[in-house]
Length: 307
Ligand code: GDP
Ligand code: ZN
Image (cartoon, rainbow, N blue to C red; front, side, top):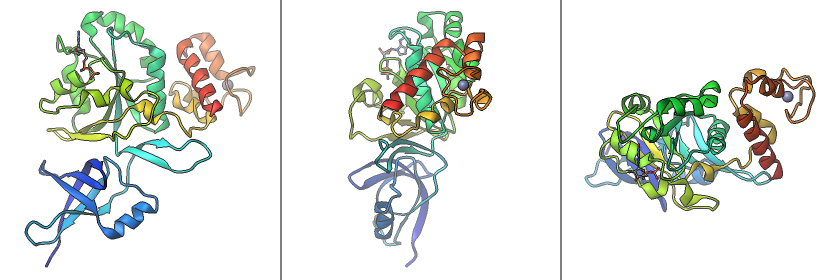
């Protein structure tokens, strides 16, 4: 008897049963083969987004088993608090993080946006900012308000589910890629994605950050394959991933507009808080780095220091 094999992607997992998406768009429930189970227990834990090979016996109705886990190209992980070791991979193989805020209702907080962006950067993931509900304000006002983020190098999308503004441009950047969807609740994440990709059926409540704010959750991420290729991951919240285990000296690296200046301060171990001849603080004084972004740097650095 010969094994039948297929490549697949882990869409979700509960209690040792993993839902695997196959290339033809169908899904199968699958468990890990015995040998792999040992490896998994030995450290490499299977995660949503992992690329796997599933196999089954020729026999009719034989169940698919996960026979191999392919190497990850990226991961969004909740690291263990410093002192402990290990990490929990929330989603593997992401290409980008979509951070959605609203122009109004709810009012956007740029410093909260910084926090999302820093978490993405700490995971080596590129981020894309989407400001939805633009019809409640004006394109001009929104561009001015978020200029500090475009100056920092982030792509900015202005969208409206009501007028259709920016939808095609956004679709072009999402199709064919694997994206994590994040942002405060009520900004229109699910409205936006369901409109871009009819039939996607995102679970609004579970992707809403507020639901998981400040507590552990057992709700795992789930991957939604897109018709044109790629997928959307509704994660239990980027803030749940947090900045656990990030070294305080790595925070400056999480601000892309700081990076070209790092290493040019007078002191090699400059914290950019109080030292003289600090390239970062000079840039803030000169207006090339925004005061708000710098304030977030100070705050987030202080936060990880406390842990
Ligand atoms: P989520 O919690 O981020 O997934 O937000 P929802 O998609 O559930 O949307 C929250 C509310 O905002 C709903 O009442 C939507 O109808 C509304 N909404 C979504 N997009 C827009 C938009 O572009 N403009 C306006 N005015 N309302 C929107
Ligand atoms: Zn400095």
